[in-house]
Figure 1 (spheres, one colour):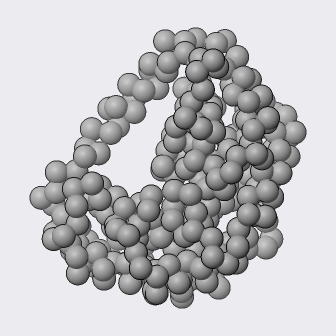
Figure 2: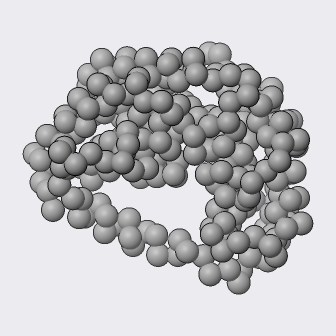
Length: 258
């Protein structure tokens, strides 16, 4: 296991690499792209007390917003759903203080994704539960809350209709989505759907144990052998967040983004 000094050195290397490549990253999304890089830099700015890193995070967000258009992909992994959830995460953690609703321009595209577009599956990264994650965040805002409830009702109706056809690979995403939704006023009926899912052998049952082990055995950072990308899941931003968590400079709530 690497020690605290090594982790600090790693974090500096990761930050330098991302400063060079962050705005050049093609993907605007949360899981693999600019949104995830911005999440890392806001946390790193807080850790170092260096506002220049927060300024850079804002630059990355600005470049990301410049890429978005009316027909941008709606998916969670690389598109608007994940970007919206990422922005909401930054606002709730006091990294962004915005008077304007940044995601207001996303809403019509996300309504179209749920109500009218063909949908791929029920997965979080590419399917309906990812859209649902976006709309859960929009419930907190008065103006889009009506649309949010309509879209969430549509998604839950499709889950109920297709429940017996949901693949093993998608079951954990569906269960976690329904679990979070049933805790929100007006969606208590999701408890009955959760009850119907009780026989699913969910793949995430031992996830906490695996994650605890990951934080205890963080591998050395080999800058000669680059991570798969720059994002949160398999890239430098994720490597950085893992190390910030290991030295207790952030909690594990960021993992909910993945």
